[in-house]
Length: 296
Image (cartoon, rainbow, N blue to C red; front, side):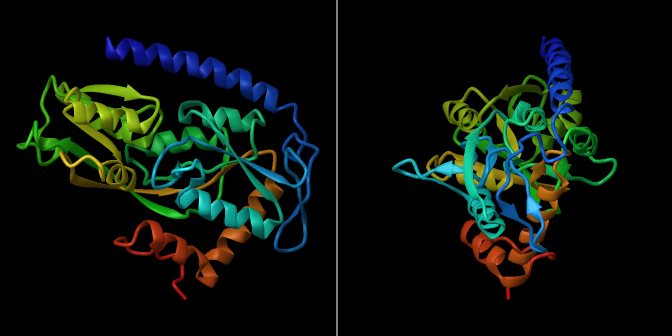
């Protein structure tokens, strides 16, 4: 049943992607907007869908990358970093909530200018995420990387204290994944052959609630997201970190190379002047700063 549902979903998604991309191909080389208002580091004009505004697509909530604080204010690592980039380009950031499973085709169809949503854009050849990344690259363009990603296994220690790694998972165990993520693809490649049943969720918080309630055996998901999700759930614990060599990047419409360059230039500035390091340490105080970023 799981295989059948996934197969039909893949076919439907492919049909939608073709339709959306066909519409996107009719857009102008400036990203289909005819807008504008920003400038790259070299002074070149940057075109956006709405004049003076950078519309940002993101799957919210996904803490610590993007989430709403008490009172409704949007924050997170992606949010602070992209807001800083927008400011340096001279654009006002405007965030738009989107489902991750269709976020790239939505970008290609000019529903927003950029995607900032903990997106895996780089992965070693031969890894579970590699083919996924290549498919994404056929739809959108990626910036330089800004975050080194790890996957993780989270379990409910009150209900399954004996599970320490994915090797302890067996046929019939139910493992939660978020639809369209590289964590889901890693689980498909590494766990389904063991008979583990993968249960897909559109939003990450829902699967952690399910794990807490005991309807899941475990969750495969991005490490920092899992660590943030379990802070208020004492029975849940990340028992394994999974190094896949993946890196995150922002995604831009392929028809808008000036915006891609402007974001890359502004991102590099944050690496060089220590702004990135300050934001990084705020959200990941125990993680090592990436080699491409400076703490100075």
